[in-house]
Amino acid sequence: MADDKTMAVPGGGDDHELTAREQFELLTDEQKAELLGGETLGEISEADLLSRLSHLDSGDVLDEEDVKAGLHNELQAQLRVIDQLSDQREEASLNIAKVLDSAAVNLDFLMREQVKDPTRTIIGPDASAESRASIREKISLPTKTALKMCWKSVLIRLGRVAITASGIFLGIAFFSSVRMTAISLQAAGEVAGQEDAARNVWLIVMALMVSVVGICNSMLMAVTERFQEIGTMKCLGALDSFIVKLFLIESAILGGLAGVFGSLIGMGLMLIVNKMKYTFALSAVLPGMAETALISFLLGVILSVMAAILPARQAARMPAAAALRTTV
Amino acid sequence: MADSQATTAAKGDHIRSDEYVVRTKDLKKHYKMGDETIEALKGVTLDIFRGEYISLMGPSGSGKSTLFNMIGGLDKPTEGTVFIDEVDMAQLDAYELAWLRCRKIGYIFQTFNLIPVMTALENITLPMVFAGMDYDSMMARGRELLETVGLGHRLHNKPGELSGGQQQRVAIARALANSPSIILADEPTGNLDLKTGKEIIELLRRLNKESGVTVISATHDLKMVDVSDRIIWIRDGLIDRIQSRSEMEEDMGEGHGH
Ligand SMILES: Nc1ncnc2c1ncn2[C@@H]1O[C@H](COP(=O)(O)OP(=O)(O)OP(=O)(O)O)[C@@H](O)[C@H]1O
Ligand SMILES: [Mg+2]
Image (cartoon, rainbow over all chains, first blue to last red; front, side):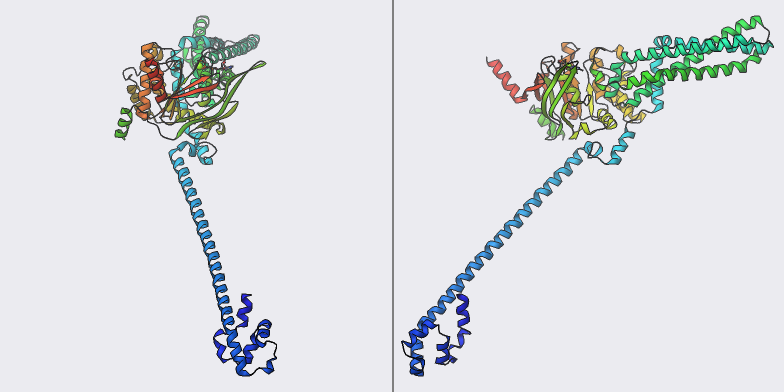
């Protein structure tokens, strides 16, 4: 409707320049009928038409004001809509600001948490791969320290260690004595019987195997005895591999000592016996004796380490919680 | 810093921040014994603040040691989670777990658990060896810690040459070796006489106040009540109630009134 009126009054300000007839043409049919009052347009003079138009004008003017008011209202309504929209936009942008703020606070919080909490960035699934990998190097038991620890431990438990090592000690003493006899015979220019040699090898192998089983058994008992000590070490940060390392080193020390002493005793006794039976120079047997001592030492170490593999693995499987147990 | 500590101490308040150092969520532990299953923990949810002194109390068999094992990463829960410094323990591999035990947690046991063949100083430096500390700093720190627990003169004695109370002091010094966030103690006074037990409790409380280390102690010992910030009562594998310091004081007040 508002549109109609606007179209019907093209250039509202040019009214006066229109002729009466032209103005008449612009009227609606209803207005035309009212104006004519039953007469035809031809019957009405120009002046009369003008006066009648001016009568009608008041209505026309009213009408125009109506239009203006309508337009004004329309404008107001649209302004209000715009206001509302901008209100909503303001609200929306406020909301966005709020969301951003809280996100920033959260982020800040998280970052502070990370700074406060070195653990989180060092270990666990949140930590970087490098950090997790470097943990492997951060926990360590240097071999030198382990050797020192085991050496002290062996010295302190010497009586106990001597019993554990007695099997390998006797086996190696026997091995050394047999070798000493062979060396002495060679030095004296005598020939050893073939049968004797074969039987001796058999006896030596048996003796050493028995001593390996003996060490294994003693070490297994040591593991059950030391459950609390092993659990405690794990509580202090020991890895399974540390426990294995300590047990193997302890066993190696024990085997090495048993090898050297067994060899010295075995060779010493046989040296005295053979010296009485045969004639040979001491210098002739010394290189052979040194060789035998070295072989004995290595044999002792290797055999006891072999014997300790099973017990060491069992020790490593001991849970850290064993530290709290008071009975086996 | 010193000022604020002095004032908090004066108020008889604990030093505590709003961070959690230990959190457990619906922790359950079942032990299978042949056909029957023992439910040692039935769903324990617990938040412990950094710097708190907590006592776990409850009758024998209620699950205190089991909870100690779970928090200390010594055993895996059947269900539920333990967070240490917000890290889920179940997510850690063997190396990380060892690292955590070495650097983050110090353990104290009823039976002291010193390595019998090592001297006091060697016992204390063992966790530092595992942590890769160099020899000189290790010795210096070891001596300093032994001084702190009042055993500066017994550096080279073996555990067998020390009294129970002295052994427990060495154990406390060892627990502090790598400056942990938490000290976990399972009945630390269980094998000690009244007086020595009291000294050990006072030592733990002093260290808690001085270094801000969180102390969590499972105990039957009612002497612990006086020093605890909170007491967590455990019954049949569940938290029965949690008493804060002020509540305890109210209880005591009422007790005196009647
Ligand atoms: N390794 C285990 N195997 C089987 N059952 C266990 C084991 N450890 C604990 N339990 C059982 O779990 C329950 C809780 O034991 P826990 O040692 O936690 O009690 P506690 O509160 O420490 O007792 P106490 O004050 O006597 O030390 C008990 O019924 C106990 O028998
Ligand atoms: Mg217990």
